Image (cartoon, rainbow, N blue to C red):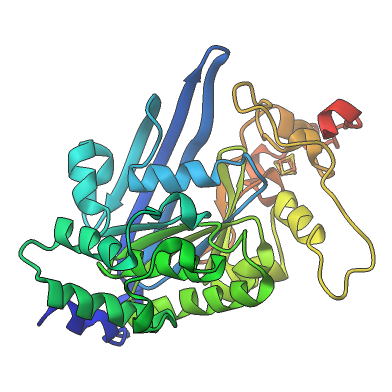
Length: 356
Ligand code: SF4
């Protein structure tokens, strides 16, 4: 079978139950003059074949660092710990050279601003030639063209644009090009970091529809990073809510949206604007400084349900259903919840400087 023959294979029913990625206690930190910035601090989750997991949280919560940590694209000077088991191998143990071989054919990344990733001096055809020649030894020009035109067609880009330069495309078309370049090597896992942030709503809907189809057409597992809960609701099977470097709630997207179990998830949902919105809600305060985050539950200075235990002990990750986990004392375990532990915490009103 030629590489291109498998592009359109339908997803097998058993595929979705197969775990492609297992992340265990992943930590990423950056050294600064003031101390270590713990951008990702003990994150664990699994991703099945063909599954889309949405990763949501405020700016500075560690979402993009997590995405880069999984694909080995962290900046120089960052440190990592934990396990990233991908197709049975721990990516944390791979050298930068070995990771380059994974990226493209096994791991893909779609970035927020395609113009920073596309070379303005290279035609689209040359981008495909470069990507395929590096990873498919011996592939000839005719096969490159065949494979490239197939993914471009799926992205709604006509073959007449194959020899164009990136600047000849609109923003939405360039984002589709980025997706086509990520897909041409049929990676098993893609990280898409805010892929629609810079686009208008019409183009955003088109890109989201393409991302939804990825699952059906390519059996691709997708980590979709966004601050937009509406995008998660439309596109994702599961959602992971990130706060201050930790996943505080993870579960089936419908369930989490219907009945959030973590006060931060509930606050994010309340702050979302929809057609039925009658008033604006914000979360008081600001995300913490990750060099010196609040002790115990990192959300406690902003949480309207905070109790004494929240400022004293790290919340324990607790199962609240077959596929859902929450890190919040409101969800147990009960043996720690003495009468003193559950006394409401007096919260200081955030100062103007904190809100800024
Ligand atoms: Fe709020 Fe306490 Fe839960 Fe943290 S552990 S989210 S402070 S209730």
